[in-house]
Amino acid sequence: MERKLAAILAADVAGFSRLMETDEVATLETLRGHFKLAQALVAEHRGRVFGGAGDSLIAEFPSAVEAVECAQRIQDALARRNEDLPADRRMQLRIGVNVGDVMVSEDDLYGDGVNVAARLQTAAPVGGIYISESAYFHVHKSLRATFKDRGHHAVKNIAEPVRVFQVYPAETPEEAARAQASSRRTKLRRKAAAAAAVVLLIGASGIGLWLSMGASEPTDARVQERADPLTDLARPTGHFRVDRPADLDDADALTIYQRIRTDMAAGYAESGFEEAQEYLHWRQFNTAPYLSSDHGARYLNNYGNDAALSYGQFEEAGQMPEGALLAKDSFEVTARGDVVTGPLFLMEKMHAGFHEEARDWRYTMIMPDGRLFGRTGGTNSSRVEFCIECHREAGEEDDELFFLPEEYRKRYLHYGGDSVAPPNR
View 1: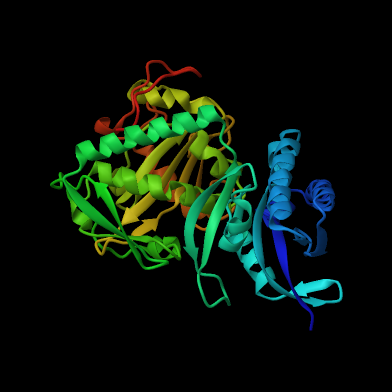
View 2: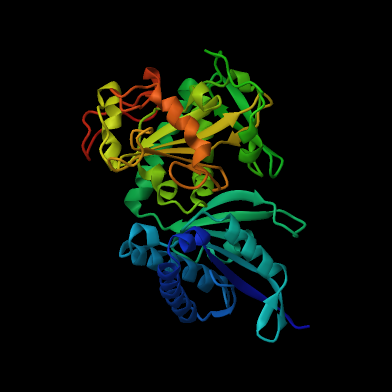
């Protein structure tokens, strides 16, 4: 059988089943428009679509540069096309690119070269691009793009882990300068807090990485091992292990969160819910992750959309308007030191009369892999009834809202679109 070296691009629609359940006709119309555009771009870059099933496509290219450049153009073009669509019809792709040996059988290609591209696509964040180390080797000096090393990933049916890079648009000189300045500030803060070192062991690759983080004397009781039905559901396939978890302080928790927050959000985004894809771009109300016994002794981070900005006034917030959306992502550090992603908790203020017992709040819980655990008035609604019962204790005066501990509150100068807040400590 003929063999050759090829650059393979694999693309798949995120949350396609949910979109089909919502509106089959509209979803198929959007899919046809998106894929027509994607196929045209593949052709422009001298590629050929040779596979795919319904909501996916696989294409080969004569060079890695053409493949990755095509992937960038597809994501950019579809992002612009989505702007003209209603929120519930927006469709995003995950794309993986690999360069490898393939077997040729008439018009089809087979082998690890194809399989790795397909696996990278599965792992990629919604709207993002993952490329293998072999592809990176060919393109990192030729393309105007930013590449971030995402470490080694175990790939099904492939003996050795694959080193993965995420592709971002190229930074402008101004963006690069801001990033460098931010990095310097972060390093200074860490040096000021550092009193010891915490070892983070990357479980997926077994590489020990020392981070300079302030491991001061503990100020409160830390996470204890417990029976929790959500823990096994939440446990990611690859995670950190932290030495001396009982000694973690706020600076440590913040550093851990900064390392995992993008991967956490990518997992939640697999749900296909727009708010799960966007919440990291909303306003954050806490300065560092804080422990919450009401959320399974997990670390939480609070975010709100533009309609929920008044949450930043905390006890003075009053009643939230319709459309206000609050998000809390979560992670856990077990007594053994495993860093485990927890659920994403969402609260959305709906129209008057939506749900009397919930005071018109809709509660949604999304698992780390994007599975929907439950949603008020929707799928598995009974599973999130405990949220209604819990928040009822906050009382009508506070619109059944609980507020984060005072020592973790980010203080804004005012609460409009140009609010200014102090940087995270």
